[in-house]
Image (cartoon, rainbow, N blue to C red; front, top):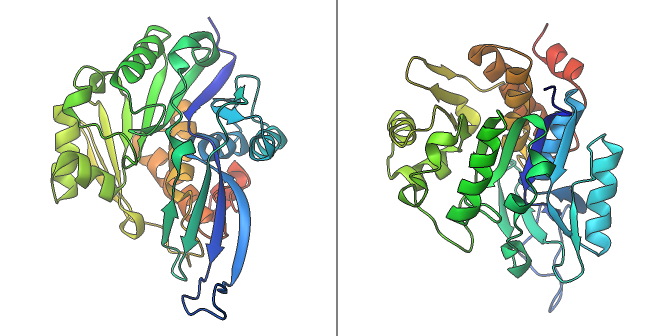
Length: 311
């Protein structure tokens, strides 16, 4: 049976308060300066859904928002980018998370989370809201709602029963801490896992990307992509291994670069691209994202990415 969507993204939705160029020297007893401050919608599921929609994928999102101004901001922005928002859950009792992010001149950043980020809604209770798509993106594994082994396993089991390709982006835990052992029965259900180098080091306990990938493969994940930032990415499965260099670009803000990478990779895989082709496209998506402040600002279309790649 033909699926209604190409991709459904499940996970955290939030607003990023991005402070760029913070000057730690006070100008008064309680006053500080920064180069700029802006509000941008974010969260891995939101960033990936918006990027996928811009890349031409028919995309939906399953996330939880408060009945508040931040939630309205996210829902409106998603709808404007063509993401189907009919699956969003709204709750007066659970405020929309707001993250404060300090972005340095080189594009690196630090973030501050709060209790609202702990809200663990139950996507496994809404199988009909995520199973009607060819692909499913976990955004992100190891953070709410995917910091509960039972929720993770239930969603993955339903996704595979529906014949979906599962892409699991990852995040370092912030409130509840799980290990790969905690997910031993769920990891074999994942088609592609995409940790960055810090996340892969944390969960694998290894120092070299090759060993990190081997650890995930040893737990049954079918394909592993280690995002290496400015060094590119490593891909490995039982038959293939490749390292692709990063695109040369002047980074302004790295927020959401990994999310744009995942969306680009998933979109090209669903279009039938080879792993090498999809990885090159994903690298370009991540690089383009870093050229402006905010995760959903710079990337605009698949044609833009192809032009960036010289095609």
